[in-house]
Amino acid sequence: MDRYNMDFTNIAIIGVGLMGSSFALALRKNGYKGKITGIGRREKNLIKAKDLGIIDDYSTVHAEGVKNADLILLASSVGQFEQIAKNIRNNIKNGAIVTDVGSVKAGIIRKLEPLMHEGVSFVGCHPIAGKECSGMDAATADLFNNAKCIITPTSNTNKEALDRVIDIWGRIGSKIILMSPEEHDLVFAAVSHLPHVVAYALVNSILNVDKDILHYGGRGLKDMTRIALSPTELWRDICTNNRNDILKTLKRFSSSISKMIKLFENSDWTGLEKEFLRAKEARKLIESD
Image 1: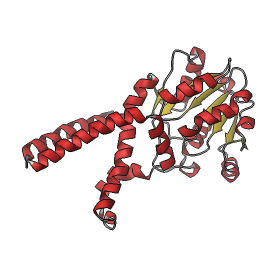
Image 2: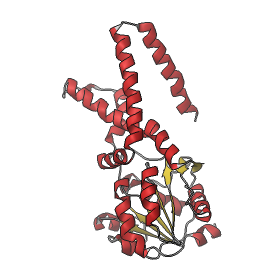
Image 3: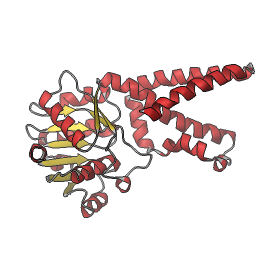
Image 4: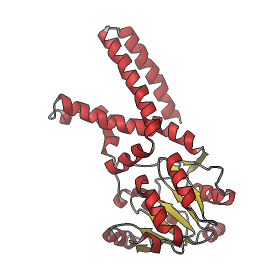
């Protein structure tokens, strides 16, 4: 654990919500002895985080909070990343690493890499460990334990910085997967972004049938629409930054729905059951992962 502490003696977390707070708690649980500075817009939230021992110090000014940081974690909404990077770029010390927890990579990395001055490295990350509820109160030290963490290096990524980021996520229990930013965005448009958009659309579809019937829904509906409780600002920004890949998956989904409609119109119950069986068998892959 000595090298771990020596590598990063001062960590700044911008966005002390679910992901940022959980990262800090995970570091503490796994033996980190350095300083953690929380940075955010709401001082009341930051004071609470300090009182709870999640962070050691705080700042409401991005540029001030990162001054001495060896590692800077962007844990706010992805739509804020570019402006935050512009705010802090002149105050990041030489040798520091900037990383993130955003679920969109290619477009964000294209914007952020040029904003890193010489001697500062950016390494894109996406821990697959969110919850439908947000905020510091939902944070837990075990959020990332045994969870996948997708790390997305580019041809510009510094090898030593990459190794150090891999190391710190591994030390808090994450399973590391390396992937190009472009592959990441296509994969997660399908397995994450599409389901969220569909969950929102499903709830709205039921509302359009009758706004007073949602409360009749049971566990099945709750399971299918749980992620529609996710923060809407966060998902607006994700959709904005991964528009093309999400559109591709939405069109595939629309084709699947159209096929189902045709089977119903033709009273093709055998064909419908085949579609159900195909999905049922494929769904087992998620459980076996």
